[in-house]
Image (cartoon, rainbow, N blue to C red; front, top):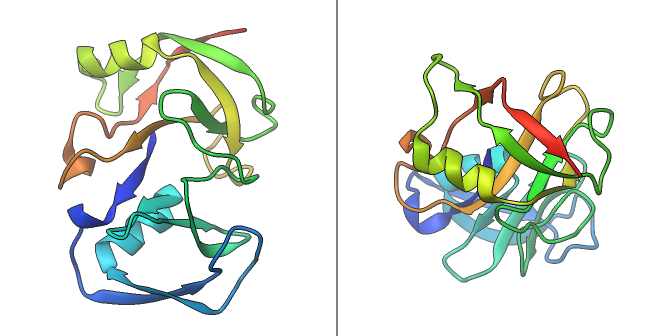
Amino acid sequence: MYYTAVERFHDGEPVQVTGCPRLDCTNGDHDLGSYPSGFVDAVREEGTGLTISGKYLNWSYDVGYWLDTAPRTSDGGSLVPYVSAATDPDVLPRGTRFTIVSCGRQDDGSAPPAAVCAALRDADWEITDEFTPGLGGPRHLDAYIGPETGPGFTESPWYLTLSGARLALG
């Protein structure tokens, strides 16, 4: 899963961020503001974060940081919760639609929480995003679930990695 970090749920020393003031720019050096270190770390890990001002701080390895009006996919489209998914393009090409038939197991071998699995199964997913080829490993897929819902989100039932999930294409 991946999500949008929310600045108000993070703390840490302020970190000055430089980048692009808009989407159509790469590796900019404009002052984008100061944000809590925990938030900046989460944005770099997840790719996007909602700032207190209501703008989105996005990050991509080939663009750097930029401010925007929406959480973005790697090609500039908007991420949509419970629709957008990312994968290595060699695994599934952009535009592939799928549903999750079975959630598989969590890293510790246990079943995922029933409510989380039901929400994932009820969604109609589409590959609208990609990550750096090879980063996720073979047959890796990330499903976008929207903004984090509170402090400590990475300790919640919604922040999980599943193995052995089954998909239905089409």
